[in-house]
Amino acid sequence: MERLFKKLTVAILSLGLFLAPVTSADDSFKSPAAISVTDTFSILFYTTNQIMPDAFVVLDLCLNRKGGIQKVEVLRDPVSMAKIATSSVRTWKFRPALKEGEAVASEVPVVFVYRPANMSSIGLPHALEPINLKPAQTAQHCSKDAGYVPAGIVAAAYPDYPVNSVAWGSVVIQVALDTEGRIMRTEVLHPMPSFTQFALDALRPWRFQAATLDSQPVDSSIIVAFVFQTPSNPF
Image (cartoon, rainbow, N blue to C red; front, side, top):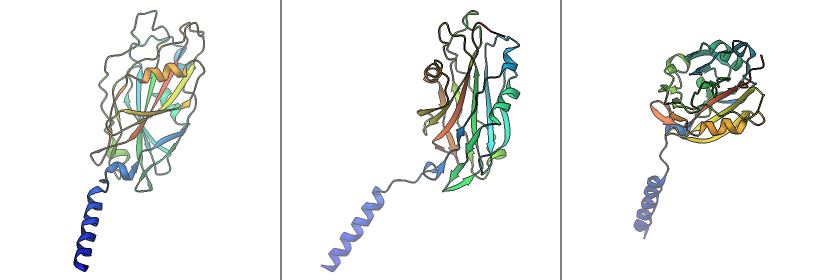
C-alpha cells in the first residue's frame, strides 16, 4: 500500500509539472506606459501652412527606472517636426518598465501623425501604403540591462476629418500590443470632442511588429498622437 501511495504521489507531481504554464519573457516583464499626457498641437508648425504628403514622426523615448525621460531619439522625421514633437513629450509622465517586479530602464515609441490641413483639396488618400518602419534599434543605448527592443510600425493611415469642423488639436492614444504585434486594447490619454473616434478608426488598419525582451516577443505599448489642423486654416 505504501509503495502504491508513493507511485500515485509521483504521478500527481509529474502531472502537475506537465500542466504548469511555461514561463516566458512576458511573464516577468511589464512594458512602460504613459500615465499622463498633454495636447500635442503646436501653432508653430501650422503657421507655415505646409502641405505634407508624409507626416509621420517617430520618436524613441529612453526612460530611466523612475519613468523619467533620459533621452529622445528621432527614428523618423520626414518633415522636420521632431523638435516640436520632442517638446511635447517632455511634459508627459510615464510608469517605468518592470522586470521581475523591479523597475528598470526601458524605451517607449511615440508616433506623431500630423494630418495635412489641405489633404482633401490636394487629393491625398486617407490611407497610406505600408511605410516599412523598423523596430527601434536603440536598446543597447537606452535599456541594455533589460534587453528590450520596442515595437515597430509596418503600416499606418491618416485619420479622416469631421465634416464642416473648424477645430484643431490632438488625440493621444496608448495602444497595447500582444506578442504578435496585434492591437489588444486602446486607451485614450488625451481626447478631443468630435475627433477621438476618427483617431480610433484610423488605428484599425495599422500594423505593428511585436516588441522583444531577450529576443523573445512580449506584450508592449506604443503611443500615437494624431494632430489635427482645420482644412480651412485659420492662421
